[in-house]
Image: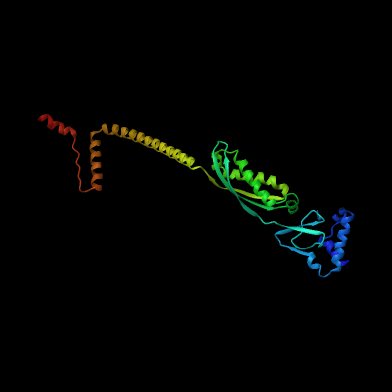
Length: 276
């Protein structure tokens, strides 16, 4: 009786067994009788242990006991009528294989990513889907195709964070019934065709050259305006032109001492030509 009360407290005996029917009751009582007759050898078959990061979903004649998982630590099962499935609660990551995707603006790109998820409800991950891990992987591939198919190439290259959040929300809603919590989705790499890469590089280079020419033309225009203003100021005073000559001479002498340039006014040459 003490063993029976202990088993009931640990969860290997549950009121849910009342729904097993007469045959189920007989099998449970028979299994319990065998356990008592073979005690203490049978105790080693009844005691199970799960780690801190694991949970055990116990089935008694095909029914989940208490509709919840057991653990961590020690729990008891009946050898003949009970079976259990261990579920790992740690976060799992996997790579999404490169997917050939046609974007909204009809550009074919190859995109891959990574998904982080964990089991949030062990009972749902066991009872509602045959293989939660494989199903999540396949769903991630189709979700990547569906989400990126609604984006154009510019959005795909510039808004990766928004696309990742959209995929995470979509996957989380789809896997909620499986007891899966999708924690994070990231786009790893976007591979463009070589021809498209060359075209984009040529376009960017042409754009940079056009901007450089515009900047150079604006600089020449500003310089010409400044020279025009300077010439008007110098033309008002002939002495200013001579001072400019001397200033230029001083700059040249400072840079190259072996060369001396002396400016000669053209008016003086004209007087010598007239005399001849």
